[in-house]
Length: 359
Image 1 (cartoon, rainbow, N blue to C red):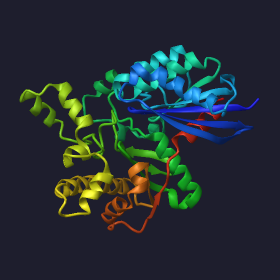
Image 2 (cartoon, one colour):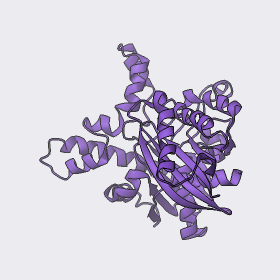
Image 3 (cartoon, helix red, strand yellow):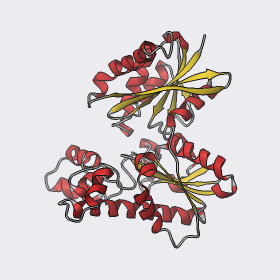
Image 4 (cartoon, rainbow, N blue to C red):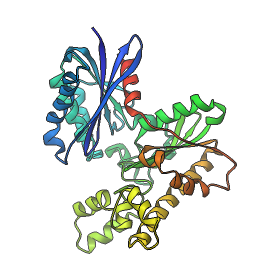
């Protein structure tokens, strides 16, 4: 009987899955799929998981559910409680649910997928792999905020970092390709709808742009990234409630907020290619602000790394928008020559490998 590892990567608007066949200690890719969430995340998760699993049987990729020996789950936030891939049971799931408030757009969905899999594939081992885990090497001076220290000890308020699975995957590929000498001082840039930058020294993350939540850092598709926190109090004093402010910072800011018409860089690129386009000025403003922030982060990380060997771009924007990569790296000319790579990330493969290792 063939044995398979199924991986779920649940986002806020879709459920991505990949199936890998276990052959001795190795994994062979079999099939992938994406099921749309249509904004009905929590109420629709079990149905989406059922549809995904059924497609594997209907497509004859697996004979039965008993062929699936393990399910690996991407979980966005592990807090300080989970720093390594972890086998999941009902007790662990309850602990994970307590972290939902730290990543409200993602963790509740991640937990719902896990709960559905525990019910639908009870004989398979369930394993959580955390986006925050790769950033656990952050030194204290990098993860602490200049806030009352008891906020850290009592509420766990600190920088955690995200997209760790993606950063780890592309860094490991770069190290294999370039060797240890050219990957001592590396900055990885995961640029998609969500964006994060990481400074990696000799394989260990020493700083990263996202913080307590995935809202901090550079501007993103719809998220603001860094702002003066005083803005929130100013808006609240002018009658805007906190829920509305949070919604705008998460869903109506970033590239969408700056351009006032789109969060998709393809739309912005089209507008900037034609000066007569009515959106030309707004699109240019959005992309210039975006690239400036990323260049500034890379430059600051090059300083704390003591130099710059390699800059890696990944994610939908990082991999495909070569004109943005050029604009970003053109601002790094004061640094010595460095290698630039664009690498397609494969979080699901790394999750499957970590799941297999845990097994």
